[in-house]
Length: 248
Length: 228
Image (tube, rainbow over all chains, first blue to last red; front, top):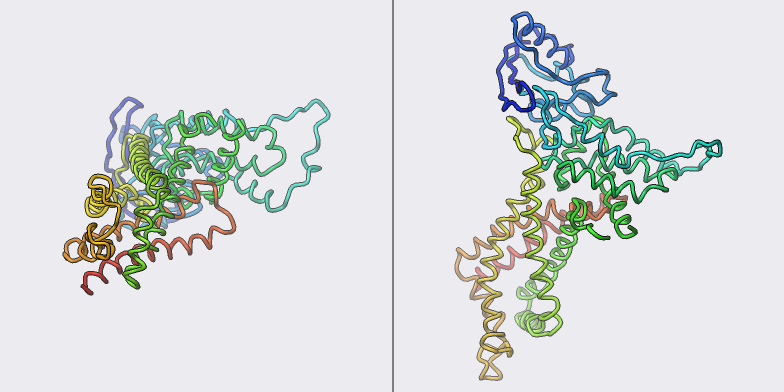
């Protein structure tokens, strides 16, 4: 396959940045998207140019490190996959592919396609955990009965890998699917009840302080989420937040 | 409770509450308007009741005006805030791949509805307020000096729908209302935290409401235009 790539190039966080065109040939349909970028970078390095910086780690769709807004969609045109699981067979010979970083004020570009998603970490630090006393009197988690439906929903919410595709896809750059999932995974379980009020209030407060937009329920986040996190989690977070606000 | 409406979720909640209130009002407005198709007398009686009953005029009407203004102002504030959350736009964005046109363009459909509402207020509400509270005529009669001259409401309605340009304007206004409701109805329930086993049924009902009610208003305008 011969392709034209239009890639966002930005030297550093302070650089203005712009789209740059690259031609790449002999791309195998069996390559992953990131392998295709590896090939491009080899060419650039051979030619003495600066390689394109992009995030990646496990390349197995688990870590949530890879990002990229490909042809107008987070993680590209495929569904239920991260960019590292996207294959070049999804494109045609002669295609022009736009490759951009995830865009949001709360995800500033560090270089080229690499964005700083530490705003998600700060939201997690604000309440995305449970405090368990491990003095020796802790009840075994397996001994606490949990409704099967709740357990399944909690596990589904917990599959969120925090990649940020929800923010990137949302026209408002809202992080509510991410925060909704992180609130839900605890709100559905008995272990999460003790800190439930503070958790949702603090996480939403941090989310707002980071500069994410307001959710307008377009549902784009749910469609583009590589882990299929449901909009139900946002509704649950809204409920939890309203309950917590009335209490606190 | 303090500060709830200064948070993103609180603003969503307030927006949803005002939307639910306005959707209930539109239903009530339609229920009265549709009477004009079936019975001149029933429409006149209902209009006179709504136009003169103290609880409607002095309690519900101010709440309605507040609800309308709040919904529009909050809508524009949220849009501005949301635009600020992404300083640089994508060179290529395929929004149609993951969301409906209606959901992505609520500000535009809402903006056109606002324009329509201004015209609607100039057409009906301002003359009504002028007659009742400036001229002081609370009789509702065609001629306040003639007791058996009959109520004026039906005649005024029919007269308004004589020019084709106004009928066309109203039809366009209601098309934008339908587009707005097609996303807004379900969105309001999601915002108040209602996404459960009833959501699927609610989505079906929302389509009936979002298309049926504006279509009904269009029918009323066309009915009076072509029958008088």
